[in-house]
Amino acid sequence: MKQMIVHNEHNLMQMALLEEGKAVEFTAERTRDRGLLGSFFKGRVVNVLPGMQAAFVDIGQKKNAFLYVDDVLHPHLEKQPKVKPSISELLRPGQEVIVQVLKEPVGGKGARVTTHYSLPGRWLVYMPVADYVAVSKKIAREGDRSRLKALGEQLRRDEEGLIIRTVSGEEQHEAIKSDLETLRAQWYLIREKADSLPSPSLLHRDHSMVQRIIRDVYTPGSDEVITDSEGQAREVKALLEEISPGHQPKVQVYRGTESIFAAYGVQEQLNKDFARKVWLPGGGYIVIDHTEALTVVDVNTGKYTGAGGDSLEETVTETNIQAAVEIARLMRLRDIGGMIIVDFIDMEEASNRHEVAATLEGELKKDRTKAFVMGWTKLGLLELTRKKVREESTLPYVEPCSSCHGTGKRYITPLH
Image 1 (cartoon, rainbow, N blue to C red):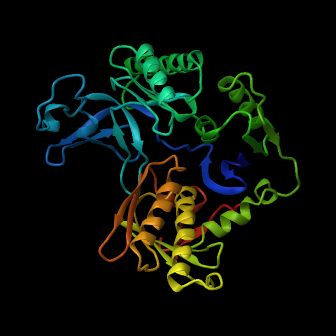
Image 2 (cartoon, rainbow, N blue to C red):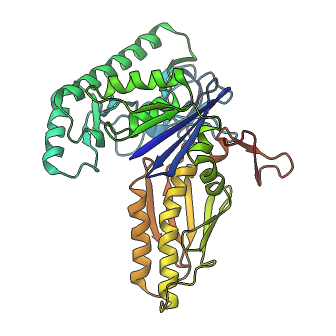
């Protein structure tokens, strides 16, 4: 069972996703300053850089957006040569173009944008110019995969593309068809706005943080949403009745005197899990450090001495397995992206190293953000990557410290 605990205070909304009582995701959003990810803009090309195979596009933000040549090309729509054309053959300064934000602005860089558009729904992801149907790899039964693939081919038009989501595994034809029609109508509205509005203009913004989480992870019949806002509870109920008709929405309004995060143990968990040093269940610990280029995780045995009779190799391996489980959860909770290097405690046996890497890979499958374990280096470090769409430090509850200039963090909004 999953619980979504939502805390609203002034201009800030914070949401913690709990699985069996343990925090696995945390996100925050300023209600007057929502992120750009997934938003559509009508932009204007400012300059084209053939040497970088990229262009900068004015979308009305502080920094111009970055558009790479691969995000302009649509090979399925027309024959493309084996060698990529110069981006100057595809775009010119002053040209107007519809773009979608693929990555939030990071540091001093503007957003990364694409013309490979996608609109996520409850049951599927609609791609107006992708020209293929894909089924989530997490749908294991071949019969369900074949049925959904055939249904997607039947429902899509012309060059449309569809990705059938994991939650659609046992869903019926009408629900998926209705979802597609809603998303198709959204795309038509975006196109109509683009025809009538000047550039730069915002054409479409994705749902609020809570609506996105519910759309992506809520399981009818078992999961529940708990919020300290009456108005938000009504909105959530209406959304759940729309996306899951026939199921009684499990939505509670918290009315206690202490904060909702304190009442449900979220505050205590986050204070521990966002620390530099995080303890493991058996007494070992991990240390997480961030550099400009990557994130480094160091694993230590700490107080863990193993069960009676365990050898050093068994003690070390058990600590590393506990660390692998915790690292996957913390990457998801803290939304750590980019390149990650893990310095596990040295193990002598190749089979133990394989077990630790396999444990980490298995835990990462629970993550909605794509992550890949690349393997062990010659120095015995484990390399992995996780898709980076925003900086961890851009979460609204932290900011760079004026004393240490960003080498540490100080909280600007208490975790209530």
